[in-house]
Image (cartoon, rainbow, N blue to C red; front, top):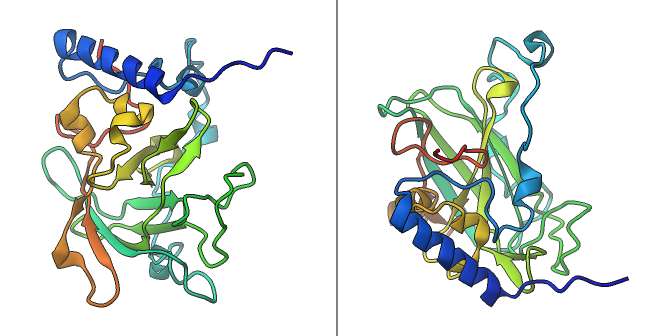
Length: 255
């Protein structure tokens, strides 16, 4: 059997640069590309054929998926879910969920999941040889307040390797999921941390060819959010519509 030779980071970086040049010349303001060659498995992650109609009564709920009786405020603290202290840098992540006109989206279910400080998920398929933290699961949820605000206490995740190409590493990030009033309104995105040297090398991040749109996925360090002697602070607002919306993982590209 012939073992395929993985592309190198240099190969992928050249592809990223070539696509960025095409974007600058021909398609300003483009959304994330679904077919993005440097992201080798991109074609497996979106439909390539026409979608089929489904009976909405079997998949939708015309009321909030979860309410205050279902989500405990303590679920927003990912550092207290076990008997011991998790390892890593404690961080506070806060922000607001708003619409395109800046109006708060109240009682929005926000879920997060992430790798631990060593860059490893609690997942059977994650065999990255980094340590598993027995005191950190890496998942939490919260309902936004009347002003659209949310706050999570967690551990800053580490970068981790993935099999896109030889020596491929993902920038540190936290996955965010938002629900509307029914399950079919779920949207998923990722929050990154400022100044990460892996940004330029990551084909998932670079598949957003508009620099301004990419920047909106990066949190801002906010020293006013730090808890003295306890945690550093990051602010990240999520805009659900309009020209400055936060891009989601399943955004369609511009024509």
